[in-house]
Image (tube, rainbow, N blue to C red; front, side):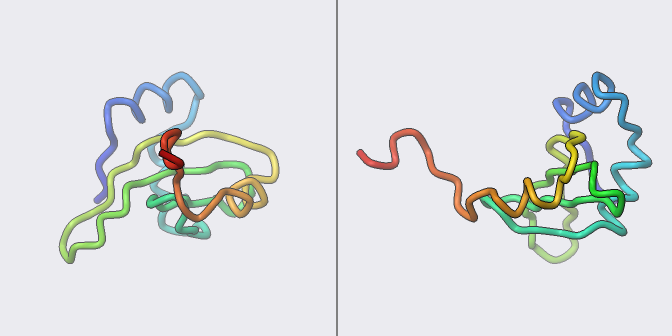
Length: 90
């Protein structure tokens, strides 16, 4: 079972997204690896769930946030694969 951070609990509540919908998206949605995190898009192509990338055996990922967006899969695919910090040029 995945855990949900306090931040994610607050955002889910604010955005009217049920934890059941989040877990359903993780189980049945399409997964993308971007910026060191896992992004899951539900089958309706509207819900994005972001989890940590805990790949150690026996550990589960932590839900960081979730949000709705039209054409979610396109939005996630356009994200850079790596996360650049503001000071990456220094």
